Image (tube, rainbow, N blue to C red; front, side, top):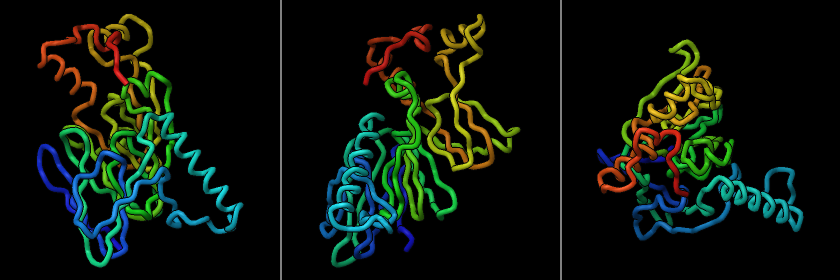
Length: 271
């Protein structure tokens, strides 16, 4: 059953989802906006599995199955904690008739509904995920170093598999690219990566090395010391505004903590 949803709005978009009786969607805590009264809301620590949270085939029931399920939940919570993610998911289910629930991202920008057909997974930057059908499985795919996680550079990726709809959000406007159209490889600001299909190889490289030009790029170009590399054949979604860029613009507008010409290399990050 296809998820009935509509992306509405301009500068700050939101997703309005219509649920059939018994149909469930889940979101990351903090992305929920509104719901009709016949839609129930439940907060859980675990993400969904392909079988709706029941023990997988061959795992067995009873105490053994419960223990494996508990260990899986603990592992997922631990991964999300290390990644700096919200520890809980919120689940919404329509009861006794069709219902409506609304979601949004946390920054002004676009939203996109990705349709998974079971053949290719999607990877999304850690702040991009908004909501998904319960038939879509969530996981942490990759975590970078401390600098990546604390600097908001997009080194933590979330993986979505299975069949169904995943709704993501980004800052500014989206642009869709395929590295295969550009010689098989593109290099982008790490904060611009929103999501990409399975089959794309994602990496991080230094900007020019620690030579004179590399230092000039990092210090005066405001690019930091790393770029994201995306290689292969598949869809890549980038955003036109980085969270770091928005934060610096707000600081300047408020007259405090101006970044200055060396901000790209020596600026500090909160969180």
